[in-house]
Each structure stands twice: as structure tokens, then as C-alpha cells.
Amino acid sequence: MDRREYLKKTLGGAAILGAAGMMNSVQASEITSGLPGLNNSTLAALSTLPMVDNHGNYTLPDLPYDYNALEPHLDEQTMKLHHGIHHLGYVNGLNNALSKLQEARTNGDYSLVKHWSREVSFHGGGHYLHTLFWAVMSPNGGGLPQNAALKTQIDKDFGSFDAFKAHFLAASNAVEGSGWGILAWEPVGQRLIIHQVEKQQDMSTWSNIPLLMVDVWEHAYYLKYQNRRGAYTEAFMNVVNWEEVSRRFELAKGA
Image (cartoon, rainbow, N blue to C red; front, side, top):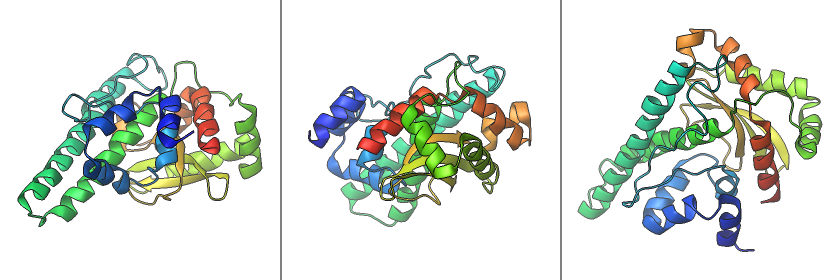
């Protein structure tokens, strides 16, 4: 099975193939090369990729549930602001940065290429991570993963689920400033790994394939939890969509 057929199978043939058809190769390269961990296996493991409009611009994906569906753990007002304001801001920022780089190629003026390349990484990282973040939560989430392969891998790499959870929450809570805590599959070592991402584009490992992530920017929790990040991340574990995480794990491990 070649890469195109694999993407068709794992993504339903829609988002990434549609995006590839609407963007030129230079633009696509700018996006994928600017985002930590966004390699071919990562793309294949994503639940849903951001859809594009008829002009090839990224658009805000709909949530797979209502804004109030994750109550009482994540409140409706925060979800509305988080999705409709913050995530939309990353979508617009990514589109704008790509447009500016297109202008640079047209005009031959690359004096701001460093700035706009960084903007692609920052806003693109925010867009992709948030798209994944919405999918790894569910009104029926929480508890323990039921997938035998994922449970076995967690026990192998962390000792137990409780040890994984303690490590994941500690790493997420200790992110300096704003960023993410991420559980990822590391295909070189064939292991699960937890790492921190600061500012959405820093402190990542290129080979990692994100499976589960928690947003620890203050906009994700401040209205309900104020400065109690630990209370928020603990509550997040009650909405983890382990079925989706397991599906991604199976795809990533087999990619």
C-alpha cells in the first residue's frame, strides 16, 4: 500500500488529499517542515485534519460534541472561547503567514522570511494540536483504556497506568508558561513517551506522533479553575477519549 492509499484508508480520503490538491508543493512543505513531529506517520494518525476551503485556506473544524457536553469538567463558556476565539485565531494566523510567504515568493523579497516562517510554526502548531485536542475528549470519556495493545504498552513503558497518569499530569503541570503536555508514540525506539511543548512549537522530538495532549495555556482553564492548573489537568482525565487515543496508537504503531 503506497502512502496515498494509506492516507485514503486512515483519513477517509478527504481532508489531507483535498488539501494537497489545493495547495502547491511549496506551501505544503512550509507547513509540514515547520511543525514539530508533523511527519507522514503523524498525518496518518490524526483523527481529522483541518479542512480547507475552495481557495486552499484552512478553516476552523467543528467540535464533535456540544460546547456544554464536557461539563462539569470543562465548562461551556471556556469551550466556546477556546474553540471559537483562540483556535480560530490560530487558523487565521496560519493562513495569513502562508499568504505572506506567497507574497515573498512573488515579489522576491525574503527580508521577513524568518518572521513569517516562525508564524507558520506557531499558528500551525496551535491549529493542529487543537484539532487533535478536541478529538481526544468525549462526554463519555475517562477511566482506563480498554485497548489491550495500548494497555500493554503503557505498562511496559511506564510501569502501570497510575504511573503513566502521575507522570503525564506532572509533566503537563510543570510546563513553563504556556504550552502542552503530550503523550506520543516514538517510532525509532518503539515506545510511548511523554514530553512538554512550550509555545506549541518548542521542545518537541521530530519523530514523535502525538496521541493524547492536554492544553495548559491559561485560556483552556482560567475561567473555571483560575490558577489551579493541577485541578484542571486532573479533571481533563475524566473526559479523555481512550477509544480515539487507542485508534491513533494502533495507526501510529503500524505506520
